[in-house]
Length: 114
Image (cartoon, rainbow, N blue to C red):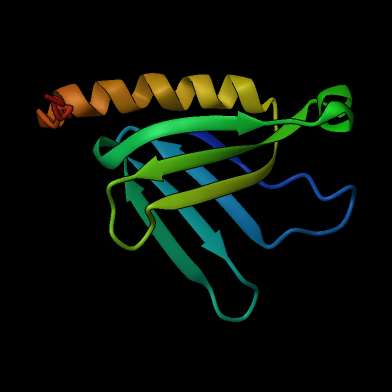
């Protein structure tokens, strides 16, 4: 069983959210829906880059979006929306991605331009 490092929901200003996010030692798991549940996973060793976006209002209330870019064909770009403490979560995700790459020996080789 994998250890869950972080679990959260989008901040919806008091409205209910039917989306949950989990970061484990090897995956990002996203579940959506009420009656029909959809579950998507991204293996961490496939993550290529992580970025955060926060406008002024989002910085004031301490939320933001985390965009995950991966080499996964079904989810090459995925956005975790309205995450509380988004920079802290993005940092945790980045550290966990590096550990997962080393564990799976999935180090990315950049192309050399001539």
